[in-house]
Length: 595
Image (tube, rainbow, N blue to C red; front, side, top):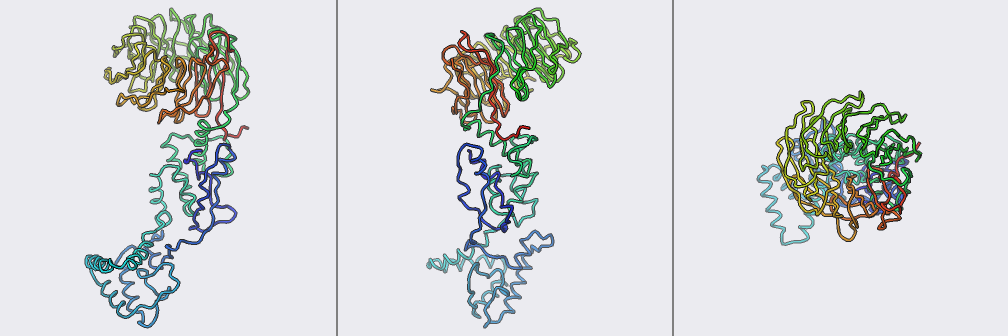
């Protein structure tokens, strides 16, 4: 398990509350491996009481006025000076300064016996306290220089000064300021800090603090019951813990989750795949789509109606949209399996779909792009301009972007049925597109990936390095992941145009990469070699194989993959009947309690 997870679950013993200054036993930081029980034991460390460090000291009454969270505390140095002078002047030369009447600036931490001060020392201190700040600084420097030849005296001065800089700032600061400091720490450090003592635990367990930490990493609030519900009261900290556990299981979980194998479509190719966490929708060139329940592993519906192979699909919470070689688009009710609309208009195969809200955009081999309302079944717009088959489309609610076999990408304003930019530069067919509202990234058979500015219609970068067709891409922020038929996956920074990593080496795919997905901090890639591989997004290192078909290297192929943060779904089969056509699902979530 990663060190980030240490301390997330540990809290002071609930049955016997330690004091606010009890230190943590360092043995609690030892990390064991793998199983959920072991991880749980790692998290639930116990705070043990140990003797106070000799360097620590109790605060005097005057210091308490200054350092506590009392809203009426006094922070004026003149106030302290007056107290010091009064105490010195009222101290008898023959009476030792006890803990009850000593001034805090002279107290010696953890000293069992404080010897009496001579009259000369007290007189010297009176003169010192009457000095200005500048004179005090010069007098202190002179004292240190005088002691510089005596190591014992210097060590004594050092030991006397150090405790005054050892303050429990989390406990002593107002809660708002302590939380302001903690918000700049990584969540893993906040979790470790919470193991220091009871006071730190209560501050570090603040709900808003953990909410902010989760939001900075785009970690959603987990609503479902988890195995940590009885251990972690803070719901945002619990969500973070589940997220870190999930990352660990993806990378290290042994054994791999038991695969859920869904067999269907006989020996036909699965051409499209959708997954929303609850249902899997697979489309095939057997003219049908199947809806699978993740909970039961059963086929809920088989959608029959197309007269040709299904080549593309999209889904919402209650609808499925499919495009086919029969030149139609069908809209299905996901719960009943009833076809609600048949959208006619294209004169050739519907090759690609892009869904945004209730609007679907379709691209066809008839070289047109059409815009439809899936609720009413109405065709809204037709966008003409391409001179060859449209292979890929994207839509963000404002712009439609289409890539075609005519080597161009076109940017459209669909409401005006107007092409605002024709992006030229590729020298071969455009096969893949990603669009984030600002950047368009296109992959072509010319081995080139180009990054375009959607507003200006200009090419920003040409990403070179692949040796064949770019089959799939995914964009997260400024990080682009591309899979290519040259059997490699590359990670790019589209702001700089630089290739950060090439996922290759002895663990690379043995043949073409068919699809890529980015999940958590990982890259998941599928290949024509029948494997699904996991890579580290930041370092580019190979982690492990997630799927390896029995016919790997002998015709087995993984055509498509879809991922959520907690699960992987892949469509697999073979090109020579050595492997049954099937959908395979791996569930990496081991923290959610199923009802």
